Amino acid sequence: MKALLIDDERLARNELRRLLASFPEIRVAGEAQNARQAREQLSALKPDLLFLDVQMPGESGIDFLESLEPPVPHVIFTTAYDEFAVKAFELNALDYLLKPVDPARLAAAVERLPGQRAAPEPGPLRPGLLEAADKVFVREGEKCWFVEVGQIRLLESEGNYTRVHFGDAQPQLFRSLNAMEERLDPKFFFRANRRQIINIAWIAGIEPWFSSGLLVQLKGGAKVELSRRQAQEFRERMSL
Amino acid sequence: MEVSADISLRQADAGERERARARLYVLCQVVGWGAWMALETSGSIVFPDPETKRTLAETISIVVVIVGSGLLLTHFIRPLLTRWRWKQLSWRALLPRLVATSFATSALWSLFTIGWVHGVLNSPWPHKYSPLLLAFFDICYGCIIFFGWLCLYFLYHTFDRLNRSEIERFQLMTSVKEAELRALKSQVNPHFIFNSLNSLRALIDENPERARQSVTQLANLLRYSLQSGQLETVPFEDELGVVNDYLALEQVRHEERLRLRLDVAPDALHLPIPPMLLQTLVENAVKYGITPRPEGGEIAIVARNEGGGLRIRVSNPGQIDGGSGSPSTGVGLHNAAERLRLIFGERATLRLRSEAPSVVVAEAVIPLPLHP
Image (cartoon, rainbow over the protein chains, first blue to last red):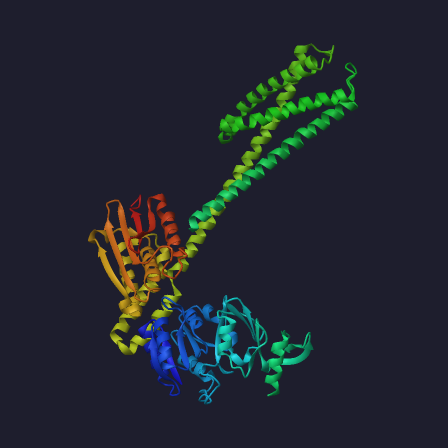
């Protein structure tokens, strides 16, 4: 697993590098001391794992994550004191380490990481499509989520934003629905109408609707209307 | 910032209290004079004067005029009492004045009511008494009424003043306690401690000598900040020593991002300074001038003996309005200013200002204690 260390203090990065030396499954591929460097390293090294300092000069670790184009790699936060900043992630099975880092705690965090992801299947329809296991980072107010794309039931356009429905939450993503549609795999996601994209895997039931339209009911309760034209396309897709 | 908000809050409070008092005054006037009017009217009805044989309407109209004029008189006396500053007088000085005032008011009142009842309404003179005796009775009666009114008025104000000074003393006590508490809290910045410990861990392998030094510096800083609550002032030299330890630890963390310039006049070293004051200014300078800037910057400490006291300036890059990305809450500086005020009163100053271009300077003037 390739890891990128992001921390503004050289000594803090050194310390983490030293601690990680006892984990052969993790290879430190690079270091960055601020968000700008981290973005460069990210596109150059394509790491699977980030160790990310929450407090950094300029952009904070959270701001940095929010700026990333999905999918985001696995993230383990590091912070000196205020757990508050990372508490928001607890529900999302995301880990954080308090500095100075306790080696046993680091071992537990590494243990919890999902195993090295299988090499991507050759030939998705288009390059750059998000897979079901890929993660999207969403922040709304104090709360943040790492959402697996496969867990998203419904995406709704709200101007320049997209409301993302998954689990019990429906936060806004700072991307337009059209931009999201380009990244979503049409095998799973279907543009139901101008405002909504549904995840086909989450369909609970389909009813005929007015003027040869369809009413799609999603698991979790949401109902989405398909116009005649979209319904036609949907029938063709489903019959394939 | 916080200070001005606090003051405007207090002013809003005072305005509210003033309105409540005006309401209370109107209520007391209406209820008091109204009760007396009811008493007079019912008295005239139950025990009618056999000589005058007034109708009910006549009786009521006379009572209304008597009571109304009394109310108006007291209403016009009230602003005079404030203008003459009688509320500040002791009871001994006040009593003769109250007697004289009630007599004068009563004379005026009797003149008016007698003139009204017997002159304008043409009510016949009672045969029992001579007009002079009647006027005397009226004046005595009025004296009692107005004296009672004045006594009640000043009693209320005496109690109100007692009450308010009690509240003020209480507020002062809590604000002092709060300041002490906040001062204590501001002494140890946990973020800094844990980040330093983290750097230290790395330093142990990389530079054992520097690591040993850092442990001592961190111990010095912690000991000083824990003990400093017990002393009002310390020699500037002591404070500077600890600030140097602190800055050395910050330099371990920030390395070349933190640059230092120290310009301290030797004759300033023995001057007294509240403990943790320079430390607070320098910590602030690092927090807003170095931490948020990827490129870091320079922190300069200048100290001079100005004869009357110590003048220190701490400068860092940045803007006051938090243009550097980390919004300033001003809590640290606010506490430091409050501490200065508690110890030295208005003679000490602490100011934060912008100095061109994009340099922020915190300047404190610490006077010599009045009783060395």
